[in-house]
Image 1 (tube, rainbow, N blue to C red):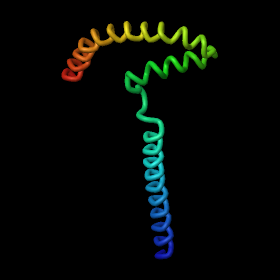
Image 2: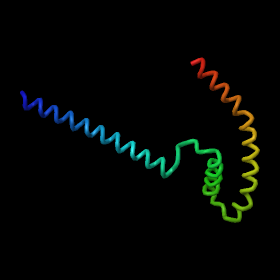
Image 3: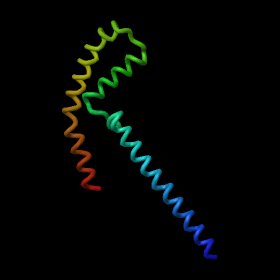
Image 4: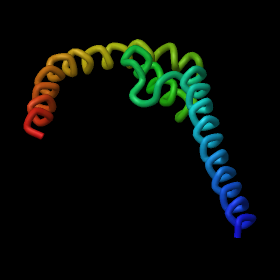
Amino acid sequence: MRANNKKSTKRYLAALALLCSGIVVGALGMQYWMMSHGPGFPPPPGKFHKMIFQHFVDEIQLTPEQVRKIEPEFEKSWQEGDKIRQEFEPKIRAIFDAAEDRI
């Protein structure tokens, strides 16, 4: 009976060690990801519009000349949209804060 308990204890310890090593590897992998790719979604506003534009460029395979012509118009539109976002952001934040307080 005692030998069976030792085997059982060893199995539990092995399972615990495997679980802990998985946690450590996952945490280190996440740390590496964050260092190499930056934080998850959403990216900072200054970087977000550049990512969107680059996706647009890649998706429709724009030539460098097309990019040069389109980029100023994209920037102008983005700035106009950002002004609207800044106007509404405090109102939206207030709605979420009030909901959080009620919850």
